[in-house]
Amino acid sequence: MPHQALLVMDVQQAVVDRYPDPGYLPRLRSAIDAARAADVPVVYVAVGFRPGYPEVSTRNKMFGRLAGRPQAPGSEQAMRIHPDVAPEAQDIIVTKSRVSAFAGSDLDMVLRARGIEELVLAGVATSGVVLSTLRQAADLDYGIVVLGDGCLDNDPEVHRVLVDKVFPQQAEVTTVADWAAAR
Image 1 (tube, rainbow, N blue to C red):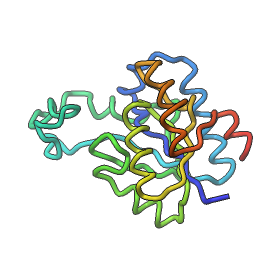
Image 2: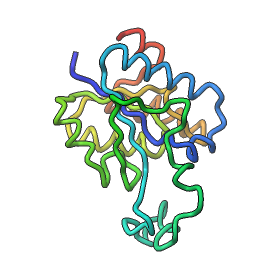
Image 3: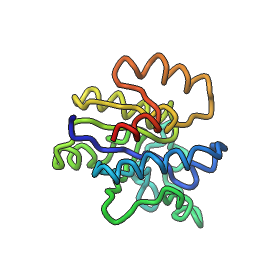
Image 4: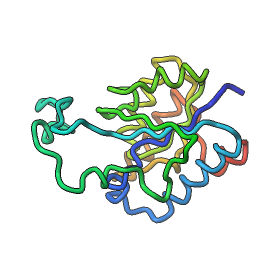
């Protein structure tokens, strides 16, 4: 079996709060617990910016509204990883500045330094960080597994099409329970 890492992406409090699925965090927690029990590294990927957002261009459709603005009070707390799936001391936290987990981060360096060959993807949103990371990981020659029910999207149909039709072209798609049972 290739050396894997579980990527838990964009499960920050402010992000998760926009996706009302009461079963999501417990499912994700079971994937994290299975990874830790099997000595599979857990890598948390979170979006983050410097004060004043100097990394953000006004041309960026997703983040451009932040460009040049002061950080809102309480935004640091809101962007912390959700406490129900919080990292532990042995976990790695990577900060990114765009949608893909690789964009503006040192993720590739961290993975290669640890000999990781296969990524197991979970996170919010399916059509955002998961899709962007999957595409870039494939171009970087990583093996990829997507935990279909370990991902969420605001549009259930978009999620279904990605998980059932698009992702299988470049990744194995499975469930949290099946992946955890195979550890």
